[in-house]
Amino acid sequence: MSVVQNRIAVFRAELSMSRKDLADLVGVNPQTIGYLERGDYAPSVELALRLAAVFKAPVEALFSLKPFAPLGHTLKEQGSS
Amino acid sequence: MFVRSKRYPLGKSFPRFTLRAMFAGIYVLYPLGCILQLVSTPETLGVAGDVVGLLMIAAALALFAVLAGSSLQRQSQEPETMLDERELAERNRASFSAHSIFSGLVLLGIIYLMIGRDLIANQKLMVWLPETGEHWNAIFWGLLIASLTLPGALLAWRKGEPEDEAE
Image (tube, rainbow over all chains, first blue to last red; front, side, top):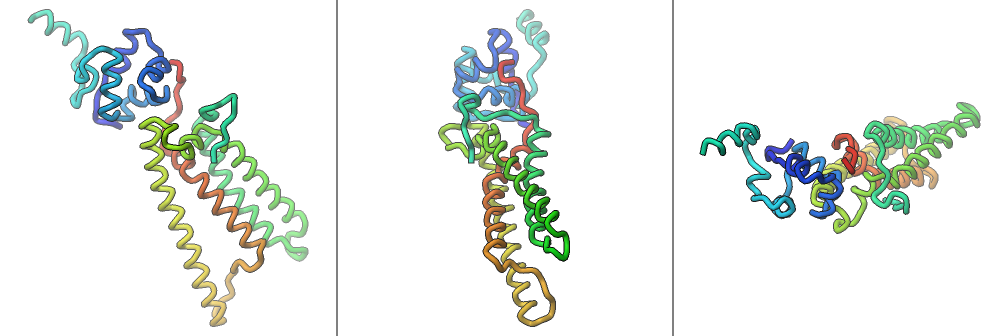
């Protein structure tokens, strides 16, 4: 199990994208997307940057060494600021 | 060895249990079949033992033929440029372990041959040693099958269940 947390599944669902679509865009086997989403595999810097480019998001929004805060918590914080 | 088919260019996916059973089948059926063939003489098991041994070897080769078109064999045998970074990383780990296991097997075999030869030369104990071309042929094909399937077998034991790719 990888120690790198990620939000690939969340971003992919937001774009209504299948694993195969995303895999084709970043040039990997569709199964690899499943491994990444489950946290069974930590991607290389190159693959992480390619994924971030597909989602048009900074790489730190997609990957983190610490567990991501729940979305509700993040939205609440944004609302108060 | 990976045999690509037009229908499954990335190799056919099997449930993990099936893959493990097929690899285990090869490693059990082939040596047992060879041993049965070896010990089957008219005084011991007769023609029946010979035929059963041959059938076991044929079954092992049939399993090998099925596995040759599997996605795991693709991952373990495909050129590096045809794999993505995860597949390559898993393959490299499996190949390293397979190399260690295979080297250990060959080393154990050589040690057995040397000790066996010494025991026979000193007339201390009679142990079986390969003598005929048939014996060496069986060992050669066994080692060849092991070298071609070990990385795939290790991948089958290490990887999780494949998921629906289009999900």
